[in-house]
Length: 193
Length: 170
Image 1 (cartoon, rainbow over the protein chains, first blue to last red):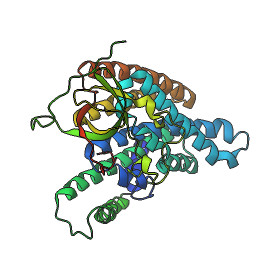
Image 2: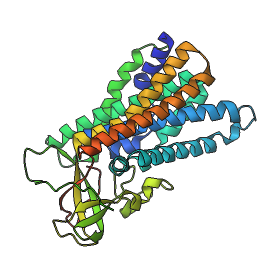
Image 3: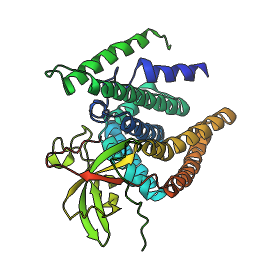
Image 4: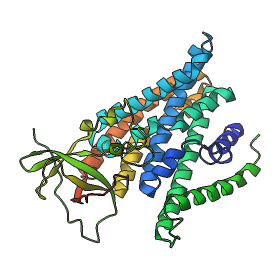
């Protein structure tokens, strides 16, 4: 149990997808102008990363490794991720059309989010069991959502601050992101091995 | 076919809940109803129509915007082709996200945890998680019906969009 907790803390905080691995930066800058939209995007991404990582683990262990198809890994994972996003879209649309109309804005953004593929490839590197892989993917996406929400909160405050005109907009956003990354470096002092 | 369309509210009322705004274009007018199509944004938050980076969710269902058309009561006498700003209650957006994503995910992970604890086998855990996902999606359906019955999922017309208004998700 302790091993799983350390794995999750390591994935969410120490090796954060955005601030330590620099994945998913596009949505990090683009969808963090409000906390509400950041939470929406974070939840959608958490769902897709977890589900697609489970599918990718199964494909890796029951198809790619036994048949020596490791060279097709990246292409296969991209297909699986696209399928997972498509499945999520279709399901939300079937489950509730109003929900689909309301939340559909986030789904196409996830297809082009490199964090989803990055987490899947990290799972292969880690040679994890199914449950460990699922928890790692879930924790990684929780870390992604956490940083999105923190950054959105900072940007909401920045919008009210008096920023010099030269720094207004994306420049001050990048400076704040770098400070946030420095703050998260503090977690690297936690030993998770 | 009757369509349940929420009555428009006074968007200038300061006591109204905070709204998440988005841009939409009027694509059809049928009697008292105007059909709107949301403007798609890209992963960088810019407008897909401006062709900034081409990341428009290629091949995804939601990238076909006609599937996300929605009706509004046309009290503002909107004409086809007009761009308007619509809004949804920020709390409703959070509830909807929780219902659609967090609920199925929570049930799926819970089921997987229990299966792993009892059986300790990858195959059984996988099968149980799939079943948990199915149950979670059913629960999401009930939750969405409950939210829909309270009229919380319907966008509201706020104002006509100005000429240079960008289509960021704000």
